Every structure is written in C-alpha cells, then in structure tokens.
Image (cartoon, rainbow, N blue to C red; front, side, top):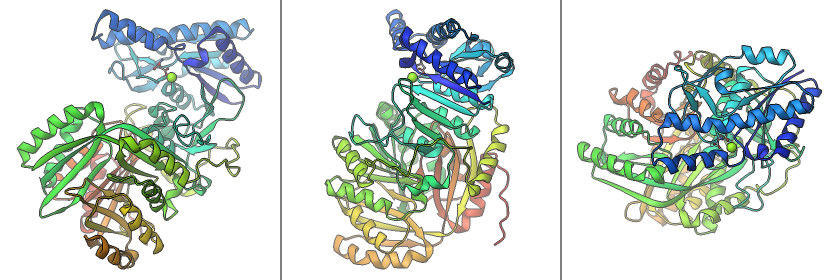
Length: 602
Ligand code: ASP
Ligand code: MG
C-alpha cells in the first residue's frame, strides 16, 4: 500500500464529466489498495474570472479580500469532487486549506507555506476516505485566508506529499508531460521521460513553465517523486526525480526561451567590494529579481556590472541604479530592452566537454550575435536580440538532437527513490538543514563547495560579432579541456571581454591554442591561475531576492573581490583569489547559517 497525492489542474476539473473522470481515477488508485489525497484547482478560468470581477469593482483590490475571493474557486472544486467520489460509492471528504491546517506567512496573494498539520488527514485516510484538499490556499497565524500565487495548487500538492511522506505526487494536467522545449515554438520538441529536480528548476526559470517552480523546490527539499501526466489518457508522462547517474548520459535535456528580459549595465564602478554589495542590496530591497548577473574582471580600477531583470521591472531598476551610480561615482548606466535569453539545461554538462562550443556554433551558423553569456553547472544561457529568439531556440534544439525520440530513456517509473551515492550525503545534509527551517518554503543554502582546481582566462577587447565565441570555444574544445564558468558582458565600442575557467593544468595549452586566433581577431589574453571557485548550492536562490546581496555583504568589509559571478536557479558561483578562499568560505557559512567546513584530508 502506498500513499499517493493526485493533483488535478483547472482544465482537468473544468466540466462535470471531467470531475467524474478525475474521481474515477482516484477511485482506481484506492481500489489498487493505495491511500489517496486529491488536490484540486479552481475549475477552468474561474480564477481569471474572479480577478476580472474584482477589477470591475476597484482598480486596486485589497490583497486580503482578493485572497478571500480567489480561494472560493478551489472551494467549489473540492465540494463537487467529493460529491463525485461519493456518487460512485466511495467515502470522500472535502477540506479547505484552513481545515487541513496549511499555515502560511501573511503575504496575501503570494503567501509561502510554513507548516502543515497532518493528523486530521491521516486519521481520515486510515478510515478509508479519499481526502480532497483545496489547492492554492492556506491561512496565516491570525486565521486570514491566504493564497500562494498563480499556479499555486502544484505547490499545495507537493507540500502535502512532503508533509504526509507520500510515495508519489501525481500532477494531472492538460499536457502529457514536460517537453524538451515549448512545442508551440519548436514542432520537433519531444516529451522528456525523466528529469532531475535541478534540471527542471533551471528549465522552469527559463520559461518551460509546466509547473509552479516553488513546487519543484519543495520536491527537491523533501525528495518527493513527481509524475506529471495527462488527465485525458493513461500514458506515462514525465518523472521529476532526484539526480541519478543515468540522467547524465544525455548531455542536454532541454532548451528554453525567456522573451521579456531587459538588460541593465552600470559602467565604471570604482573597484570597491562595498559598492557592489550596496548595489545588489538596494535592488533586493525593492524586490526586483535579478537574473543573469555578470560582473566583468576589472581593469584600471573600474568594474562593469550587468544583470537582466524582467522587462516590467526595467523602469524601477533604472531609476534606482542612476541614483546609486551618482552616489558612488560610477560613470554610466545604460540598458537594452529588446533582448531574450536562450538556455540549454542538462545534468550531463558536468561531465561532458564541448557543450558550450556546440551551442555557440549553432548560433554562429544562423549569424546570431551573443550579447552576454552566463553558465551554471548544468545550464548555459545566452542573451541575444529578441527578434531572433525563436530561430535561436530552434537552432540549439537541433544542435543537441533534442527532437530525436530516445529509446534509452524508457520512461519506466523509478523503482525506488533514486539517489546517487556521491550525492547521497548532499541529499542528507539538505535533509538535516530542511528539518531546522522556519517554514517549509524558506530559502535554503544547503552547501558551499570550494573548487581550487581551476584557473581563469580572460580575453579582452575581442570583436563583438556573430561567430566569435564559437571560434574561441572550438579552439578550446580541440585541446580537450572542459570549460566550466563562462562570463561575457556587454560590449563597448564594438568589442567585448570574455572570461572562462578551465582546469589549471590546461591553462597554458588553452593559451597556446588561443594566441594565434587573438592575433587574427585582435584583443589580448590574461591568465589567472590562482583563483578559487565558490559555489552556493541551494533551493530558491532566484525566487527569493537578496541571496546575491547577502553574499556580497558577507564579503564587503573583508576586501574580498569577486572577479566572476554566475547565477542560476540552484547555484551562485563566484571566482575569487585563491588566497582569500578560506576566509570567504568561512564568512559565507556564517552568513547563511551553515556548519563550519569539514576538514578534508588528502
Ligand atoms: N486557481 C489558481 C490559479 O489559477 C491556482 C492553480 O490553478 O494552481 O492560478
Ligand atoms: Mg494551473
């Protein structure tokens, strides 16, 4: 006997026939001997209609009353679902978020779950009930109804699965799984059989929004296996599970596009770590979510920092940055609005070389210029002109054969919760940190990893034209070296700087391979052999603003200079001088409440 949470989205409960079909599905699981908790969304467009109704009354509806209103959509669904199950002869009971005891913080319309009490559900399950819970809602400490943000029923479902220690969380929806990219943009897109939490998070943040990101963060924290599948068929969908080695066999699992990005750049920032800290702290204070953060190596004592924000935040970000620039004596603030971000994601990037090269070559073949590059362990993102975005997405999708059907990936459900041995201790240390969290959805920085094996290469003043990055990385690929962090920032007067890290022993080979190319292209090269790469691993790094700010704060009065930075959904990586690595790690551990580093004996 297993405990299963089944979540049905809005389209899966839109009509009475579909409600009956969902009820039959739950009953089938019950007949197979499982305990079943159903989580349901509001029917069809109910939530949109309620929002429209509120706007007819007032432009600016108070958030508390908005939650009172929106929570009714799910309440209709649970009542109808309980009737449906009972009409088929099975015991069922509907419960609101408050009745279940889903306690949230008090931020109306975007509340985060703190705790869930499970006694009542557990008792009902033992008595043979199918328990039907309203998604998307909870209550705060003062018993006000709260909602979790649009799409929040996924988060309710996974949180319940975690709290009840369920064996599985099934997400029934109107698509049959997660795809290698948006099938509306790329016809060859294929359903993915199996994907890790981290890959899914990196893809979700870049636009493959099949599920609420917060639900995947919870699944990762509590190791809840998820099966996303169609409510209209019995076909296998996509399994979202913990990382396992066989997931690395495929280098790239998916590609994604974010269209509405805007880039802001601050030029000529005095090279003082306190200033960079101030900049990010004040951006975070305004709740502006920064995405690709790129800080270029400084020259002549001045730095350049760029980051992308969503287009809707551009105006407020610019106003704030101009103010800061004036105060700290930065020379210029500028922005670019018509940009889009294309990313590839895959756990196999950790262990395969030539991935960046292949991506850049695909873009070069289309004559698409790369305006900015940033990477994580399992993701490479480039910023390009928006009008070429879909072509770029198609080109990279093709370059990694993502349109091919894969029979190695057989789509069989994992027999047990897969955790790779080397990663098992990570999952364990995550679990022990999660136990001490103030709330289920609180931010987690679960580990800091220090890597002293790499050196950095910076190419200054190379031409900012299509195909240059492809040529550079194809030369590097010929040396067989595995490139890790890559950072390229905004061009000035037609040239740009590009930095990347490679294993230290490879530095001179890479230099030798690039020197003839630089003679042809123009530009110069600098090696930095004694850097350390520090990676903050965690959950919710991007959706909670201020992680980067907290990191810079930890450094600012110690004179620790961050020479490269890469940010993503699950990592923040920085390069600093190796001599400062121990101090930097100690400070970060304190800032993020992590235990002191274990001493490793070699
Ligand atoms: N009904 C809510 C919405 O439409 C929550 C959900 O469907 O997940 O956003
Ligand atoms: Mg939904």
